[in-house]
Image 1: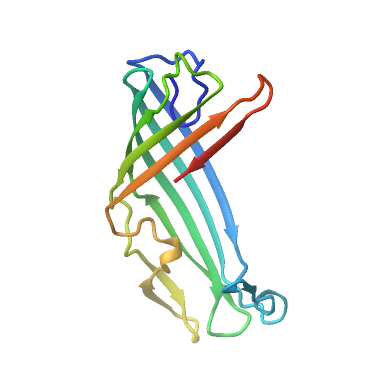
Image 2: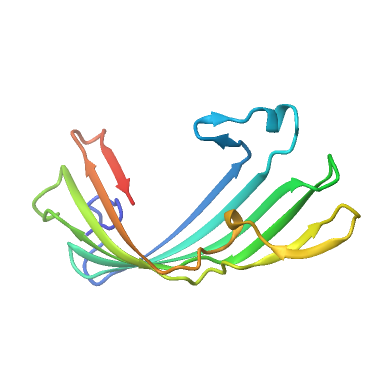
Length: 186
């Protein structure tokens, strides 16, 4: 049995548990209006905002049989946002750290993995819960050098404050034993 992109010939069978840990990092510092990048924010004005996000996802998957599985995804997030102070040339950072929005997703392989080996499609239907804080605050550097407590930008909040439904499709096709295609649509 496989879940979330694993090959169906793996040794995982019904009744098993899988644990998965993923780390994701990204840094954003470019600014756009539509499709036009605002190069002057970096090159001339030096007032670009810099977001850094490190996310550690812990996934627990229960495999019921060769077609059905259930996944619990628990993210922990460490965010920072660097921006200019009201005094030109002075940067300061705000931060958030903690539990993000938890997801629970059920998965089903459309084709029987015992019979179809070259490719398959897995569909998932899940729910996202508002477990990550969406109203965190931090101290912002003021023009006079003091700090004032204020709300963090939504780009570094730990959650979005809403409960939602997710639809996911995982698919793979291996035309040979050494070459394959894989896609994840979320």
